[in-house]
Length: 364
Image (cartoon, rainbow, N blue to C red):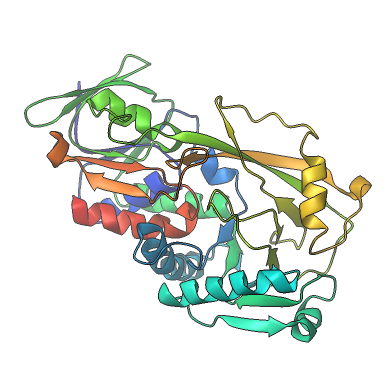
């Protein structure tokens, strides 16, 4: 039986960030991931956007960790030569009726310490992005895009250079609590004894919590999977900023937005709908919804819109429910000392990842 001090479960961007950070100060850090490599789910199936922190309730973990994490990610990308583009974004109001919501969004962002926010009039919007339709827009200069694969690759490399071990094809099937540690059984027959566990299992983080003995339904830690699809288009070119509509009032998603990748290619999405299975199949069922949403702020023809990719978010917020924050807690009060849960780490999880790792380090 393998004995380890700190076992991190999950090799998405949060798990990698935690491994990198903890391995700077702790000698015996092991990360296990059930897939063949890192970031196979939400961490690689997203918009690759670095968020500013304008959307989230004041003093929430999402707000604080997003704002702090953004600065950390930009510094890390600069240091490690990770491709990124601090392009900024425009959140557009396409009618006079939407302007109050735009002003409220700016006010919320300022309360969250997001700097440089400005309201642009129609003339300024046209000057920046001649193709978009907007009566006003909120300009968010700190938003950007990043090569998430290279970001995770560098985190993995740094963790290993620090002495951490990262092991793939290691699916956890049970976690048993001891007086002073935990026994972890894996699908391949391996057994680990760990002094401390960090649960960063993403879509399956509630299952890991349940395995150790936490009643996730009673504690309101049951995850709800929310699928989002993307379309791409070669029709639209020469876009220099990300273009966002006003977000969904319930906070389920940020609206079907226009993003550019590091090659300047345009894609739209994601939409959002709750699902019961982990399935990345796509069809054109929602194409009309995309067209309707997109054509509010930029013209695109139906034949110029093509399926691209999709992802699934792990949300604590149930369908029809209210905002839920990141859950990042050490579980001594529930009877499981030295067990840290990171559950419901959806957007802005990539942006917040390095700040989440610092939060975990404090809890440890």
